[in-house]
Length: 198
Length: 198
Ligand SMILES: [Fe+3]
Ligand SMILES: [Fe+3]
Ligand SMILES: [Mg+2]
Image 1: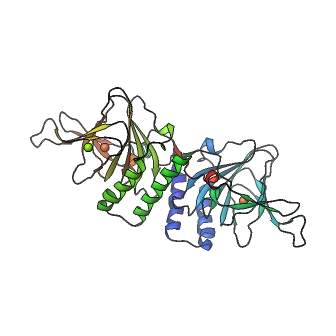
Image 2: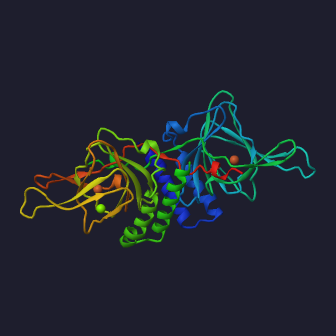
Image 3: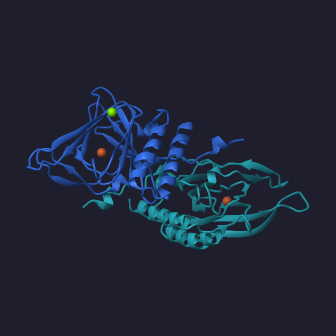
């Protein structure tokens, strides 16, 4: 139950940032600090949101009711990777367990195969931002071929419902992409009866 | 999935009321209208939040992240009833399925057995308010001995975490009561990938 307290406190702090109408710069600094606090310990993620599947999993942990931000658990089974994709909104990626590699991809001005850019390897406790302005297209993969890695992502919207794109690495061709989520049930963070019991 | 759209729209409208810093009067009028709209159809409640148990069930559907309001499914198995209890916050009770009877209970000024007050029988589609000022202590029971009844409640707080009281009918004696919730998983209302699919 104490794990849920940690997640609840994080979501409440993020909600206060949203209520303060934080701009992207604040989300990518103050939000990043909050996320760093959340992932500093790996003892709070519900088991159901840590399970690997036949492809990488995206489990929604919380969506702001006004869809101003969301918090998602990404679970990479051994060797799993995303397609090349964009986000169109700001994002924060915090590594909880294992390691992942994010490779920026850029359209080829000459046409043809997309061009790799910055490569980030994330280790537990590390947070990196993505931004629609500066670093929006990438491919992410588990750094390990033999174990599961998990990162906690925040985005400036309900990312599972954002109409964005996946890209063909050979041609750069875009295809409409709405990711959805793999979970139909969210953790109930609001039963405080045990904490409050006299 | 369309059922979840209905519940999501309700929660978003209630969130806008909270953001507008609605006072109790507005919650008990505008909030009541919204709840009446929600329960006008009985096709949206997830199966897991409609299941009766050995005693009445309270399944959290949504809690506002700042705990300004919550939405709860109360499920009464045949003949089930609550203890006599108070709320300390405003509430709205909307009958979804079956019928229930709410009996107001008042402390006996002379001491001894509590005194029944107003009796409300709720039929599907009806909404009644409770208020800490005017009608805070009651007992609620399924009107039917042979089938399940379900009502959808909203409160001006995270009701499962509010320190309130249950009362001994014979003496009026109060005991501290924090109800909690019966569910550890909430419905995920935020996967809009099917609605948005081109
Ligand atoms: Fe990404
Ligand atoms: Fe009640
Ligand atoms: Mg009536």
